[in-house]
Image (tube, rainbow, N blue to C red; front, side, top):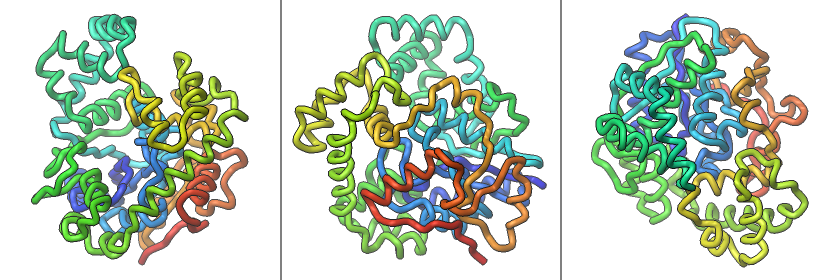
Length: 379
């Protein structure tokens, strides 16, 4: 069986995602398309605007055959581990598997060149020199590449190119026997916040929802997604962030923050002090903000505190999936579930004890809304 795999978030699902799924199936001539999707929290460290089952249903209606969950320990981490988690799940499929991903570059071979270059001693030396000066990783990475190779530096200035390179590095580092195909991204860029006549980015759609610009939302997403979002209450979504802040104030002092995933270089002391001195989430964000760490890193770390996520980096590098959590599958595509070489879980209540997925779902239900318990099947 030929299988195309797309690692995604769909927050929300927009027309560019329909294009990528269609191109993935066409170019790989796949029999099935599987999405490995983040659950109820995203890599930005935020609650998704719709629960994971709603977003999985969008994916099925937009062209996928099945959607399985990328566990929170990979989602709420750096791009490196986000990629490793997705690749591990893709590699758990039996068949002719190709990982498909959008990028501004669109040239798989060029992206592989850069992935290999990043493993060179010259690049590692330059990167470590900037890190030793106290510069944050993202800026050190960009500056080291700029010093050594202008062409590559221009390519890695685009977020989807960076993630594409991480996918390629993850395939190599995990010795995964899967193919890779980069598809050129069309329309708005990852960081765009404005409507685009071709395809508006998911970030732009979130910005439209925040402004209440339903007309632009309607033009940017498939009709079935718009039906779900037309009555979206952004103030209710904002309130979920207030609830997260309140939970952090309550729980942070009960946790050993130094053992939480991603906590490093004494950031736990900064978080503890900022929480004690802040009256709301805006003040907390202001006190935590620093040139050394990105806002996304800080937001992820706060959610990891609430989840008591103690997965360490070395574990994530070596861990192979013991099970996949299925969120949605088409009735006539259920054969794809038997292609997984690990256990298949279809109901939240049967998740293994200690699964971080269950913890993330409980947190999401606490701050957003109750979610379904079992995978969705569509005809």
